[in-house]
Length: 231
Length: 231
DNA sequence: TCCGGAGTTTGATACAACGCAACGTTCGGC
DNA sequence: GCCGAACGTTGCGTTGTATCAAACTCCGGA
Image 1: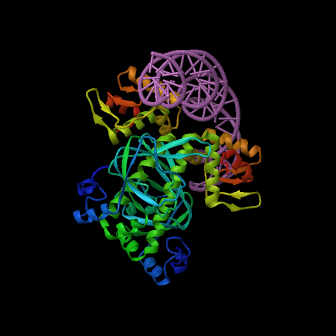
Image 2: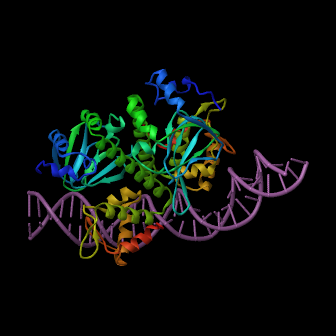
Image 3: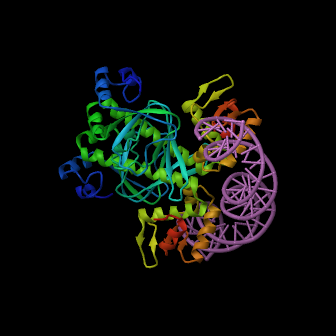
């Protein structure tokens, strides 16, 4: 359990515009909890009774089809709000969130959402801003899915994870949380077989280096070329 | 040019919670404009300086890839707000909106957004609600695109348009605005050739009846079966 | 009335990706 | 240190869908 200290929140976007005393107030009303890898924080369709802030770890936000297939809609990294369905007047969560690694999150009852946004204008504007960014991201993923071939989609998915969580190592940039072939196929709408083949080929070419649930991008530039984004 | 009368807005979701005098105030500050079929209301990347309400007609909201392909992200029908990037603290529009049929829209400068939401709580909550619905829709389209085969995606796209704009005719339910094969392929991430083949086959089976830019669903139930949604 | 463009239909061909299947590897628990 | 489960790899046959190509239909304007 981390110490609940003002400095935890002071640098985070939703709170960076607030004063220390205000942060203290917000923090005093939060519940902190730890989630093991693979655990659900909340599930699609359940009552949206709380909203959350990820302090440590990484999450996958997943939607399921009636047929049982699942799709990873986006990832959440530390410092981001999630499960903010109440901000959009929803009474159930539209997706499931799963801890991709051991994670720690704060949460508040939804009743506090309107209180926070009313009392702290900086909180409201920053929250809606991240919401807008997230909407834009999903639209971008959608257009990518609709227009690009599988190879490019997988390359883009890797780059997105690297951008969000990449940290330098000796051999390249490493994705900070566990990722399986199946996970990548759930992000890109393909099969784990195809992903496995692609990663094998890229490993042979020295572009990535992957162990079991762990991926290091050794040649980001070549991956960008493969992803087909032209600047 | 329509008469700008309170009754225009009184029944619409964003305004239904307001009083007549308040609606009058809002209306007095709106600009009304007509858009011919194929005209852009605003374009992706341009300064988001106004927000809009569609009074009559239908719009396509389109995102383009660097490679020149385009994807129809969603449709707007009468009574819906659109171009509400300012609500999410965006300074440019994230997509382009095109009139799918001759359309009429009101618009206001973004500076009024904060004024409206502050002064009329009902307007704010309803606006964020539609935003939440739209986010959910896009997530659903994304999962559909990632998991379903082309035939099901096309069936779903037709059903979505029917739900949004369908009106009864002698032979079935008709989509209220012009739709080309190319349009459908832009919604489903396939080619106009494949869409043409599918529609021909369905027409032979008596499920749809399509003329040039005009589609009537004659057997909605069979189309639902084809779409593969199980209730 | 004729022309041209926009939209549609249809056929033939090619290949990327899926589905299935079998085997290999790593990891964690007992 | 062994075992079983989870995850990954690889091969092969198949098929859905894109691609290329060509012709057709409708509609509006000159």
